[in-house]
Amino acid sequence: MLKPRWWDVTVGAGSFAIAVGLMFGFGPVGQPRQAVALASIALFVLGYVLIGRATIGNPPPGWRFPAFLAVAALAVGVGAAAAPFLAILQTLAYPLVWVVGDTRRRGILGSVVIAASVFAGFFIGGGFTADAAISGATTATFSVVFATALGLWIASIAEYGDERARLLAELTAAQDEVEALSRDRGAAEERERLARDIHDTLAQTLAGLVILAERAGRQSRDGETDAAATTIATVEQVARDALGEARALVARTAAVPSEPAFESAVERLVERFRAHDGAAIVLDRDEIAGALDRDAQVVLLRCLQETLSNVAKHAGASRVVVRVGVDAGGGSRLEVVDDGRGFDGASPSLGFGIEGMRERVALAGGVLDVHSRPGEGTALRVVLPARMMAEGAL
Image 1: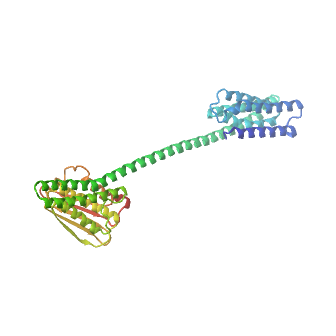
Image 2 (image 1 turned 30 degrees about the vertical axis):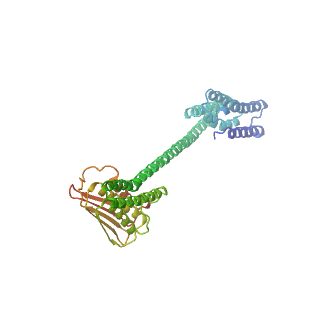
């Protein structure tokens, strides 16, 4: 309704219809009165075109509102005085003063002024009689009440529409912000996942290479050429494994051995750490009765790799027992028990280590328990449910 072209059509068609009605049966008998009534219609149209139209949809109205209100009131009042039928011109004047005024206060003020001009027109045109005063007051009162009520209702609808538009804009901005935050969070989670993958794979393998290289150096210095050669061969094999792990990370696949059988992957990890650390590692896999999905394999193998790495670096254990179990329904468990020096379980852990395993297991919906005391070794247990969150495991 705030498009000038629609008001152009409304004012033009309405004024033309009023002029036609005035000339064909609804107007005064005398020609002078008819001429004055037609001039009032023309004045109203000119006031709209020259003053009021420019403010439609372009607030604030400034001086144009009082100027248009004066012209409209004069046209309606003079027209009603010349021909009572011309009081119908107020049907155009009332909505225009609300649109041009652009505020409730101006709309109400303009409605009162137009009603007063209608009353004055009836009173003057009726010869200042009591009947003319009553007729004018009745018409003006009903028209101003109806116009004000309708104007307030339309204004509330317009305000409601503006409020909805504002809320929609805020909602759109909030959605954009949430989307940006989600992207940032996704990127942060991906960085954390990559950090865990690197720590659990390449970092552990490289640490093993350092240990093997140091052992080969000692053996070479002590003249143990055969042992040094064996260690160097192990270094070569571990380096090849590291290359495979790096390629797996680049391919965004699980950075663990890719054998189809879970048992073979566990045995390979155990054999690697036997060669690294020299400790007696006993593998118990008699309880593997069911099939294990790929995501569960990734979690268990990485936890096993991290645990054996911690044993090799910190425990100083002579015997390690690894138990792996998979029930018929797909639930799985991993236990690693060593007779090493242990640690205080109440002290905060450093680095990724146990906390990284705990986070990975929690994402898979499982539980990780660690029991250790200084001088009494360490026991770690991981239990995973039968059904895992495929995304969370990685």
